[in-house]
Length: 199
Image (cartoon, rainbow, N blue to C red; front, side, top):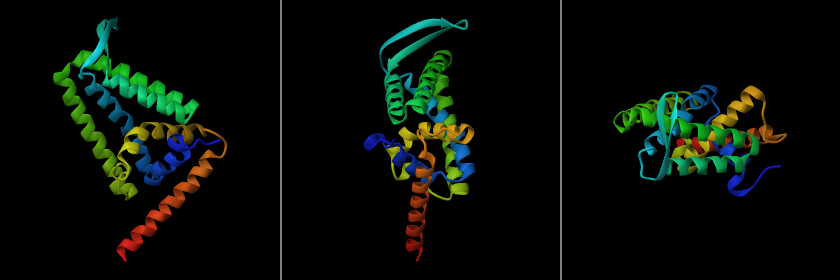
């Protein structure tokens, strides 16, 4: 049974799906969305921390920092679990792995190299996504209409999209059909508005 309000997965996924219906655009997002989150966590590693914890790993020294990067990881993780316990738990695990890996990489690279890696990765990933929307989807990205939802929801939705595509996963029976109907309705509404603006 679907949830309502902030945790209305059907509503959120339909909004996302209306901007991501082209298979190539979806594939591009699957490839680039999580690296964007990872590199954000990588640069946040260097923000002020409440405390840190270091330990040896693979012959190196890793320092986990408890700062804005961890707070962001926890917000994303808890929110995803609230949206859907199963897929959300997997997404939360990936978030934690990204945070841990970003700490490991930041420890090895230092700020002077990390910020360059982040800039290059962000440019490549965002360029890829804008190409996906402009060339294949032929619709502006969701972030232009709902910035918060686009940033907060995107990692979970590309993961859920992958689970649906490759394993037939649904948060509950009938979810995919319900959402697809809402996606089709939203796309039709957008196309009608576009026609009215042209005419």
